[in-house]
Amino acid sequence: MNENHVLVIGGTGMLSKVSIWLADHHAQVSVIGRTQEKHSDLMKMAGDPARLNNIAVDYYNLDALETELKRAMDKHGPINLAVCWSPFYPAVERISRVITERSDRWRLYHVKGSRRYFEDEPLSVSASCQYRSIYLGFVMTGNGSRWLTHAEIAAGIIESVKNDEDGAVVGTVHPYEKRPC
Image (cartoon, rainbow, N blue to C red; front, top):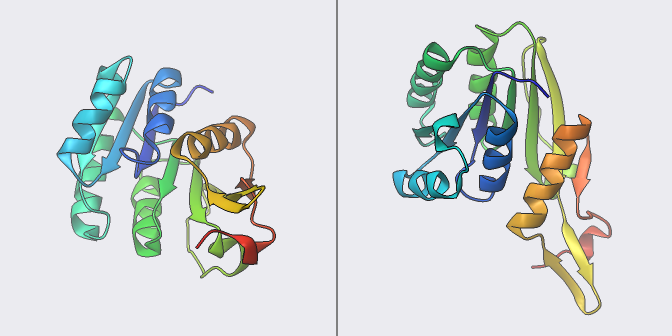
């Protein structure tokens, strides 16, 4: 992979290892997270913190999200790849519109919960976006099931990005009625 500027939404928590992996393999990674404290923790974990551009914004605030995203692209150039963990589809659509204004062709890996594997709402992204879904499932155990760990989630997402997979499932989503409560 040879991306110049990558975006990770939700990259300070569950996707922190994805943010770090991308920073190790790309020129610059802009990371959207809600709190400065989590951004500070991410910077401590990074091998090269200079490759991380921390954006402390709540993606539910669409105007602030757009402003900060444009500021990041002004500084680091157009975004070629985005990994997005946001159940708030208006944010994903706004991100798509803003990135498309400056990027002719880019990829979006949209990380979703297991329920969306079975029933999802419509999402509108630009034609220049190569859209990929990644579904987070669960793990069957001898006594039932458990949710994926952050490490398992990160490893599955990294694998999906490496292989440019669409419709990837991390863990399992079947049988859905056996998922943890």
